[in-house]
Length: 285
Image 1: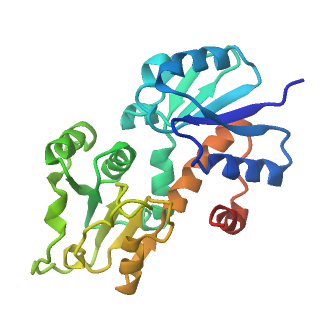
Image 2 (image 1 turned 30 degrees about the vertical axis):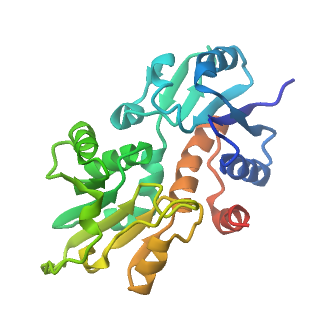
């Protein structure tokens, strides 16, 4: 009998950490199943899904770029999370071969923020950098939790379109990425009772890319600085934030959080999160 399996698909796919994460959890729980990486080109996406739809051993797949939006019309249904984000990062196969698209990035992004979000606030504000694929789930997650968002991008019109689509009509604003590069003499008001986030949802700071140009005079006191980049894990933004005394969240927090949601849907058991420290060590070797 063929072992159950799930996959991650994308183009390229060699850089994905998902096989290491899921294989680690499968081993810890003693589940007789596999998790693989599968290189799928855009023109092969429909054929891939047709083949897997007919395979009862296939539990589903995680979806990376460039397929998160292109895969949507090829599925039988989208759940509320996928509809809210407007992108699919996980496909689940039912016993009858029906394929459902969901999005675990939203939950993954929010997971490390839950202790903060559990408290009441007078106001919640986020400064988010980047208007690409990673930003979609982040903007939707922030809107769902009552944040007013300033979205900075090289193309402010694209940023405004994302806010119009996903921002739930909150007091949101789009600005040019360059807005936050020079110093400002803006005097922040009393931030007591205010939750401020600074989120890098762009590739800036990733290996091979220039750092995010942010002058910390734009960052309110007490902000949490969150960078979704995972290579390097300790980005220039996070290093600079810690040097100035800000609380930080790295990209592995979101990556592991979203993977845990998918893992339980694929394999029917919660991921063994008590082993996160060991998993982080493996992923950063």
